[in-house]
Image 1 (cartoon, helix red, strand yellow):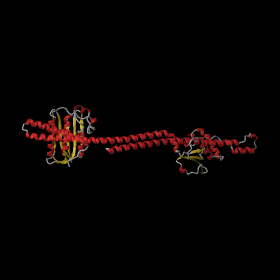
Image 2: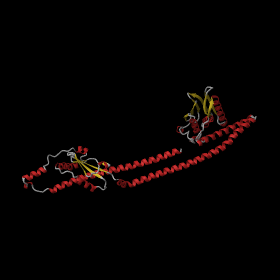
Image 3: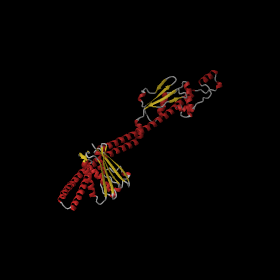
Image 4: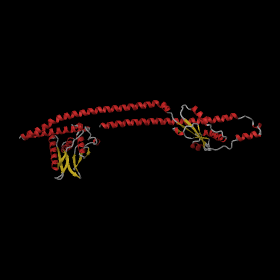
Length: 454
């Protein structure tokens, strides 16, 4: 039991730590997604602003001059550099959005402008873009931009640091409708930023985890203390039971010796009845003691068919003496060969049969009919106790073998300790056997247990 409690407590702590780890990972993942979205938005804004700067600088360099005052050579030069727009292009907006070239239709104009400037070799300036991006970002974190020219097959970066040293890589940002250039950003997420943003939640969860671990250890300490108290209680009960059992055993022997000296049949009958009741009391004490000790040391010996018949006759006779106030019948059937033998603990077997037969008498009306069948089935000896008593409700059938369990109906009608059937099950299973129950309220119950015959 001690190891069981320690195992459960250790598993509880492990589960709490795993849940805490999962919670922190979930927080970090949410922070990372938020961080990634912010980076993406800042990159888009930086691309727009860098494009605006190039467009404005080009506009400032222009000289405003009426076309009719220009020479033909001047007009041809301007038209060559800034050709008249051709027939308007038709774009598939849904396809562009699907490819990630634009996010909304309003970006078509800017992306188209990027294509025109690429043709004029007025292309994105990565250093300017990086400066704008740094100015817009609230957090300072390691990063580098990579600009890939898909036409000229060139790559430009803002940092000579190895790309493998960065933890995360962004999605591609396409420059222009034709996506002639592709921009990436490699970056690391600063741990201090994550801690700063989630410090309250992290501290709260850590405090809760620590409280849970402290409570688990406190529970372990309480369990150890209770276990020591239970152990002390068992020792005390063992002593008390031994003190009770010794004089009772002496009483049985004295009654038996005195009965031999008495000639009056009436007095002998009284002595016999008292002797049976004292034996029954000793059996009850043994049951309580075995439950407290949680063990039944087996002393197996060979039992013949004749001895088994004798044991059952003694039990039936004893129960008749004890329950004289409650009419009942016990019918026994033996399907055993005369030379049949098997090994079992004789006293414990007697205890099992006595418990089952006595329960049939106690939990029934007057004139209950009880049948005890003993037969050999393959390599097992089978005992069946059948009665037409009150029966056991379905909801209690799995609980009846628990220590000290008694149904509410049983509590109202009969005195008891709730140890008989738990001891029966333990003894049967200690012999390597099994026990089964069939019952129906108002009809009766059938207990069947088997023991190895070899």
